[in-house]
Length: 436
Image (cartoon, rainbow, N blue to C red; front, side):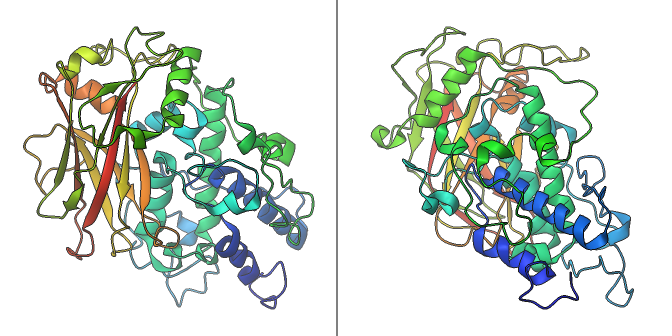
C-alpha cells in the first residue's frame, strides 16, 4: 500500500485521506462509519496479500497498556509498522485511570446506544448526508479510550490523517470490539430510524464495493465476515423503564431551563416509573476556566440531601461481588460544554465529584474521581465541544464514603499534569446534570 501511487484508491495515502475527508466524530455515526472503514481495509489487505483469511488484529489496551511489540523500534529499524509517536516512548504505558477494568465496565454498562456510542447530532431532523460530520455529544468510549490513544501517542495520530500510523487500525479495531461487547450485553436496545437509515454514500466504494453503506447493515459483524471472542461472563443490565428514562434525558431540550443550577423535576410519561424517583435536571451557565493550579467546580443544588435522591445506588457492600444481572436503579450524567479544546494536543481533563480537598496532587486513584476527558485535535479544533460523562459509579462510591450528606452535587474539572500549563487549560461555558 505504501508503494502504490498516492492517487491509487488502495494506497496508504488514499486510505488515510478517506478518514480525513469523511469520518464522523462526536456523533452516533462514529462507530458504524469506522466499522465500515475497518471492513473495507481488511478486504483490501486480503486482496493485496492474497490471504483470504486475513483478520485484522486489535490492540486490547484495557489489558495490554504498552504499545504492541511488533510496532516498536526506531526510525532506523526498518520496521514497516514503526511510526514516530513522540508522546509515547517505547516502554510507556497508557494511564490506568482510562485504560482499566473499571472504565471498561462503566462503558459496557451504559444504558442506551446514545449513552454508549455518542449522541445524535444536535437537532438532527433528517437523513440528509450533511449530518454525517455534525456534532452531538461524545460519550466515554470516544472521549476516553479512543481520544486518549490519539492524544497520548501524538505524531500523525492527532490529525485527520491518523490512519497513516499503522497502529490506528488496531486501535479502532478494539473500539469496534467494545461495541460488539456492549451489543452482547444489551441485545434488546432500540435504535432510531435517523441512525439506522443513514447511508455513507461512496465512502468506501473504491476500496471495497461490497461493504454496506447503510448503518442498519453494519450492526452485525458476522454479516461483514468477522467476529470477536465473547467475554467469559456477559450480564444483561438493561431494563425498559431505565432505558425510557435515559431516552427522556437524551431528547430533553435543556435550553428551556435557563440557568437552573437547582435541580428541576421533569414532568411527562414514565417519569418516576421503575424506581419511584423523578427525573431531575439542573443547568449551570456559571462556566469558568480550569487550569493545572486551579480546578473548576460547578455546584448543582437539590431541595434535599443528594443521597436521598439515589434510591439503592451505592448500597452494595465491600467484599461481595457485584454481579450486573439487574437494572441500575438510578443513573446520572453530566453534559459539559467546552468553549474549545485545550491548545495542547495531548491535553486531558480529570473529572471529580464532591472532592472538597481537590488539588493538582489528587489523581485518578481518589474515590471522587469519575473519568478523564481527552480531545482529538484533528476533529475537536472547530469551536465548542460537548461531552457526556456518566457519574453513576462515582456517585455510588462517594455515597458509601459519606460525602453526599449535603444538598450540593459538585462536578469538578482538573486538567491533567502537562508540561504546557497554559495550553492544558480549558474553559467551560455551561454544564447540565441529571439524576434519572
